[in-house]
Image (cartoon, rainbow, N blue to C red; front, side):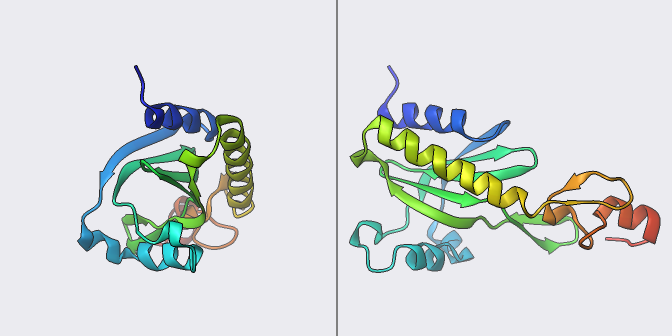
Length: 164
């Protein structure tokens, strides 16, 4: 029999844009220095319910290209907009933009579904507004695949001679 957490994860997978990837995370204290603590504290400032950062949970990433990140723990679900930073020309690092943290155990399933649906739709729409059409290949590209506002990385290499 599935646990409440497993059911929640299954429900969220259905709400996220497809395909959905998932991974179990057990973040060590050393990984908290990636800005997560500051972002969580900023989002939850003054709210005693969010006074600690969850380090164990399941991260779900929905969409292709990716749009929404959900980090699910036993008590909290954090919804974020997908974002990457390039720490090296060939190494992107996930740096999601936090949008909301929800104490999900205190909500009935219909309330959760309504809240989660609204959040996922809003985050997806917000993310897709950042996409641009490449002037060469005419494909819709997310911002991390763009060399400039109008040229994707592949076309910058092919047409402009740029090397990454």
